[in-house]
Structures are given as C-alpha cells and as structure tokens.
Image (cartoon, rainbow, N blue to C red):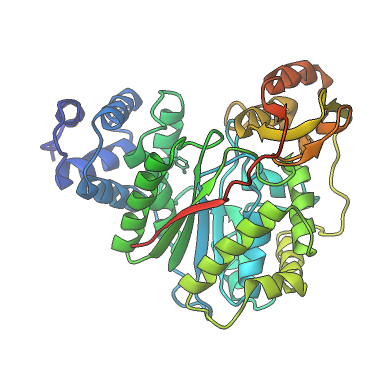
Amino acid sequence: MVSAHSAVSVITSKRDGGELDDGQIDWVVDAFTRGEVADEQMSALAMAILLRGMTRREIARWTRAMIESGKRMDFTDLPRPTVDKHSTGGVGDKITLPLAPLVAACGAAVPQLSGRGLGHTGGTLDKLESIPGWRADITVPRMREMLADPKIGAVICAAGADLAPADKRLYALRDVTGTVESIPLIASSIMSKKIAEGTAALVLDVKVGGGAFMKDIGSARELATAMVELGTDAGVRTVALLTAMDTPLGRTAGNALEVAESVEVLAGGGPADVVELTLALAREMVAQAGIHDVDPAEVLADGRAMDHWRAMIAAQGGDPDAPLPTAKHTETLTAVDSGTLTRLDALPVGLAAWRLGAGRARQGDPVQSGAGIEIHAKPGDPVTAGQPLLTLHTDTPDAIPVALETLRDAYAIGPGSAAPTPLVLDRIAP
Ligand code: URA
C-alpha cells in the first residue's frame, strides 16, 4: 500500500515550525527503522527538531514510536519492586557501580541497562569490563534470575539490539550531525530505552555544569521536566535530581580507577561527594520502590551492599577479588603555588582521561582499562607548592603531552578559602 506520508513532507512541516501529528511521527520513526527513510532525511529532520523544538504531545508520541520500534521488557512478575536510575553523564560518574547493589540490598530489584562511553564521559560497561572475567552480555532469562535472587537483586548489562532500535540508529546519526543537544531528542532517547526496559520506577540524575550536556540550571530543569512527564505518562514512577557537574565526581576518572573507588565506597570509605550522591539517589530509589523501612546509609555501612556487589559481579563471570588492571605509565602534575584549589574543571579532566585512552573517539574502538586520571586535591582543599595535584595513567605515553596541554587551564590555586558548593541542586517530581 502506498503511504500517505513522505519524508520530505514531514521534514518541511517541522522545518517551517509546524507541529507533527501522530500519524506523521509513527510513520517516520517506523519507516526509518525499516530503512525506507534514508539517514540523510532523518538527519535533516533531527536538525529541524533541534531548531524548532517539539510540543509535549509530540515528544510523548515520538518516545512511544521509538519504544514500539523494538521489544518492551516486562518484570511485573518479579517478587521484588523494580527501580532503576539513569544519569545524563558526567566526569568521574561511577555512581551506578555502588548504587545498584546498594538499592538491591535494600530490597528492590535493579535492572540497569547501560551503555559504553563515547567522548569525554565514561560508560558504565567500560568500567565494569575492567574487572577480570566480567561480561556485559546477559540474556533476558539470566537477567530475570539475577533480579529475583535475594542475594543479588541487581544486574548491570548491555541493552539487547531489540530495545528501542530506532533510538540506536538515530543516536548514531545525531552524534555525527551536531544534533545531540536537543532537549526533545535527548528526553525521548533516554526515556524510550528506560520505559522499554520495563522498570516500574525510575530516578534520573540530570547533570548540570561545565562537564555536562546541560550547562545551566534552566536547561537542566527543562530536560528533567520533559523526562519526568514522559515517565509519568507511561506509568513509570519518575523523579529527577539535578546535580552539579562542574568538577569531577570523586577522585578518579577512568575505567579500573573508578571501579577501585566504587569498591572503596562499598567498603565504607571513598570520597565524600561520591558517598553523598550515592545515598541521595538510593533514598529516592527505595522510596520510589515503595520501601520505607530501610536506611540505605546503614545498608552501606554494615557491608550488605558490598555482599550484593560481590554476588552481582560473580554472577556475570567477574572475579571481585582479582587485582584490577593498572596502566603501564604514570605522570604526576604538581602544584606550582600554595593556597586553596579554587576550581578543577570537569570537562578538561574528562577530555584528558579520554586522550589517555580511557574513552573512545568512535563507536567500537577499544578502551584502556588502566587509563585515566587520579585527583589528589578537590576544590576547597588547601595545597602547597610541589604537592601532587593529578596523576595521569596510560599505556600509551605518547598521549601524555596532549593530556597535559588539555589540563593546562583546568584548575586554579588562589588565596583564602573556597565556599563549598552543593551537590544536589534541585528535585523535579510530577
Ligand atoms: N544519552 C542518551 O541515551 N541519549 C541522548 O540523546 C543523550 C544521552
């Protein structure tokens, strides 16, 4: 049957500021998934959406069409309530690693479908793959077994090819056509995957600041509101925290380095900001899961979260006791002045870690497990001339000069003290 729609008419409607109707949206997403709408046509439409925006109804329909391009998972028969979290991505953001086993130890089931990193923000799967033996490819029946097991209760794995396939193709196009930074496209991309994943509740960590997609609180609020509305309309209990991403989270950026820091948190130590954000998100997640009689801080302190981490890693073939890989070369950058570290910018630290081999430039490139940056002083800390500020780790020493150049203006040391800045900036609920 000949369709009433054409790619050109959908593109020109949006280009001229029109509102796409349900039929146009359903057709264009489906035809793109089937290969009938060409990549260059979808790229033009993505640019028109970036420039013209979308109404709440259009975003909801677009998200629904992307979910329906693949299979929807269903965990409603599990004996425990499901809840997941999604972060829009930041430098040193390893929170999923301690958080998923912590929330599982509180009594919820955490089906965490994660991705690999592209550009300056690391990917959760890349981090976990630095653990000897650990595998991201888990079948759905195995995922179900892990979630139902009261000793595990969490799984962090790669999304199957049939989870919102339209988003996978569209995201790859947006990445190379300057159309990532569109609130309707980001919100529908993230939420189509999270709704298709079948979680009953979701907590969003929307990052704000120089190291994040959203550089200012206004656009972060707009993105968070769009995602909370999409989740709520789809029957997923959804809340969002807006959290600061001006400086890296914790004291490490890089795959194995971040795993080591996450294990420190699970052992009751670790950097204060990582612990604070892990607990803030855990409290939101257990509340969304309807669990009101458990304090995540106690579950972290008494080792129950660590037990779930060990069981979760072992269930995916990993050895939680194996030494983590380390890089072949290190180089330490020291302070030239004494005073207070007044800033350490997330973006150059993320870019330098990426240059050192912790991230990839193109999908499918390998990453170095041991590469990254260790942070010896955080904003607000006193420093003395000659003390280590940052240690660079890499297997490819040729990358060190360019990483050092990237870090040249990444920090400042000044007189006096620096006022502490809050980590959780706002909360958006339906
Ligand atoms: N992460 C996603 O999954 N999609 C986006 O569009 C941006 C970040």
